[in-house]
Length: 278
Image 1 (tube, helix red, strand yellow):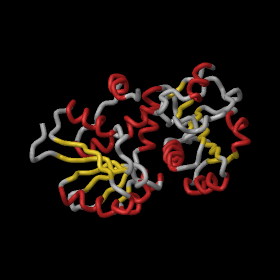
Image 2 (cartoon, one colour):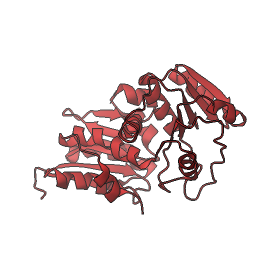
Image 3 (cartoon, rainbow, N blue to C red):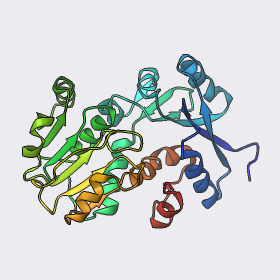
Image 4 (cartoon, helix red, strand yellow):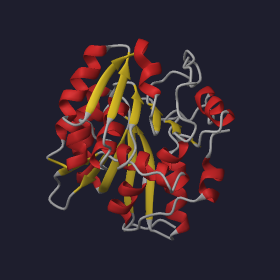
């Protein structure tokens, strides 16, 4: 039940109708008996700043931010968490009591928590990682891995300049390689992460020969439509442990829910099964 004292949060994006966040957060609100609501907010780019600044004035406790607003939310935040600064983007906003905007980025958190959930024996602090891509998702994932102690990270991208810019921004034990060098990059890797849109429904396939990759290396794809991408299917068939990207979506929602509603919600197999695409 919702009363006049309900805490209200939501997700801002354009488009936003596809977002699974309202169902996810709504389920948690119901599960924990919280007097609150979580609503989708379709907001255009030109209206984003005014809408974001208006929300705390009308009682919102915070919002998630999705495409195309993550970088704009970063610039508009009055205070940034260290992981948001590292990611260069904001996906979670908390409106503080004085009305100021606290910007956070929980993508890296969600990525690592998903790995720990599905591969509890995996250690980012002892594994050499290969990250495919150099966009916003790659930055959040790479930053999280480095902050968790990753001893060596290889960024593989078609645009070398973009990967070099990202490596410079993150300032860690990072090596940059072109797509033509991807085979050599896989040797001795303990983790392979695809952060590109290749392999996603409606996108070109990710064409990658996994033969050089050790069979005990963890393979994960942040894509979750389809739930099992060709990359994960090929890795599973050769015996590699695989982690789908949908768990990352579930776990990245936890910090915002805790900040807004006061409870760190549980992500378990039952939630994954109920929420999974298809």
